[in-house]
Amino acid sequence: MKKIILIAIIGFLGFSAQAQTKKNKNLKYTTEVNGNCEQCKKRIEKAAFSVPGVKTATWDITSHQLAVILNEEKSSPADLNNAIAKVGHDTKEVKATQADYDNLHSCCKYVRE
Picture 1 (cartoon, rainbow, N blue to C red):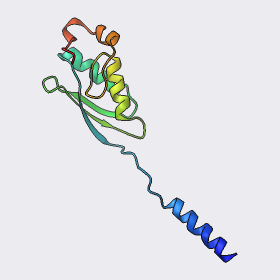
Picture 2: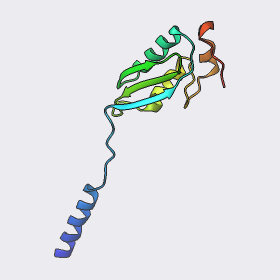
Picture 3: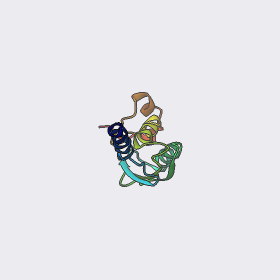
Picture 4: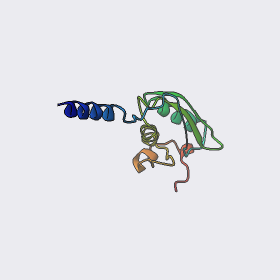
């Protein structure tokens, strides 16, 4: 009987001691987003802020880098990339559909890879 209780306690402690991955509430995430102009900047940043958990979003026109602070408990970098692709801009990780790209204003159309 003592052995059964001891085994049960050890088993319980083993399960409760497993490492849990804690999600970052202030993940600093940077990705490349294709675009050309100030209108692109507004659209990209608006799409980023539409994702739950995005605290800041800044896209640099010259470097094409989007810098975001994201709460991973609410959404992931993949959610962010998908939202940006939905408005017609390719990211390093996700390409926009041709239909979404075609909806961009003529000055916003960039050379696709």
